Image (cartoon, rainbow over all chains, first blue to last red; front, top):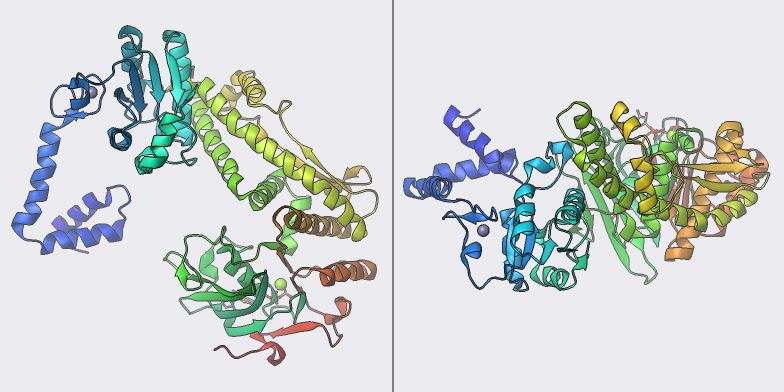
Length: 199
Length: 370
Ligand SMILES: Nc1ncnc2c1ncn2[C@@H]1O[C@H](COP(=O)(O)OP(=O)(O)OP(=O)(O)O)[C@@H](O)[C@H]1O
Ligand SMILES: [Mg+2]
Ligand SMILES: [Zn+2]
């Protein structure tokens, strides 16, 4: 319908989560209307983020160095690990100011439908951290969805086997069922954190 | 909660039609093809945002016209009027509004009545496969306890995941390791689902027995929950699933669990599904719908609006009388018929009748819209 480069841009934009064909078209036309400077700033920002931001080699959070800022922070409590699905889940938890431990980012949740098996997540690395580094408690903060709950159950079983001395807890069920951590507000999430229960 | 008036615009065979409803029984009369079922469908659509007879909503707008719209005026216990509006344009999101304000879904909207619908093909609920009865039972759970509405969907998601895993293990792409996890997740939702079904049926059964008798269903009618699993706890379910790994892996799907439950409608000690006559099955379904109405009143203080399509035709005169008495005694209902004589008292001056012919409603029921 449009010139091939415009179509290509629309196709790329439509790949974003929550962006349909129509919104992609609107965004594309916004970019076409924008000045070269403005539009290319976006392109540069994308390039820069892909070139400089990677994953922390300890916890798999986003990092510009080999390890992330939280892993580098000496004041954080190494006894408690909070396990989340995605790097984006770290931010809302940090905002509650209830948690002073460290994180472990799985990179997703178990979902056979999407072909995600335990080996596709950073579970082996988690078990390694837990059994070697004097971790006392693991808080499983995966989403309150079917896949998040199954992942929590799997982790609890695996840790009972590999590190029986470690307490495994789950966020209190203050979170609405089926919800993503990313969208929970600070108050609910803070309460869920304080009321966590043993798995 | 009453529906006081309805307004249809380009819905099915109606270009523009308006009617006022009785606070009890309204009879909708007209020949075959006049638009009686369409009228009930319109009311249901405005209450729920869905059609009770099709999932292809493209059928709803009048031929050659883009937008179908139904508006209901309702009045609650507080005597305040509300307007519920549902509109559909092919290729667009449905437009649902309450007093002019858009809403995502009408299901939890307090300004609309709950609805209970009898269409001839709903006899499948009595005659057909268990899946229809399970779905109906789960929707009753959701109507009685709205907060439990998600259990069925959560169970289905876990089931789909476990089935996908079985398929992957069978195909050699996944290891068995996480199957125990999915057993546990499925069992957790499954036990909840079974508990919900069992509690709603425990509450419903005495009402069904009474309404069955009211409507002339002989032989001590009763309802019976037939769960597939022996145990009712999450641990027990998990163990039952665990015992069946080998067979499930061979099949590639989960053959055991509450997705195989059934409910039996019984009269004279036998299943109405297998042994009931057509009329008895019809009365059985009506007894179920009226029992559900009793339950919703008892639990939520709400009487659903009953939409009964062509319900009289196969009933004998005694049962027509019993049904008409029940409809006049309480609650609001719409009953369609091709023949006014099939509705006892249908020609009495006190009975509100909407006459339908070829997509127009009779002048008696017609009111200009402000
Ligand atoms: N989208 C549409 N536009 C126009 N007409 C339609 C549309 N959908 C259905 N119809 C027509 O509506 C008419 C009335 O249908 P309806 O099912 O309401 O009849 P009825 O009064 O219930 O008849 P019966 O007594 O046979 O059950 C039918 O002739 C059908 O072809
Ligand atoms: Mg009809
Ligand atoms: Zn880190």
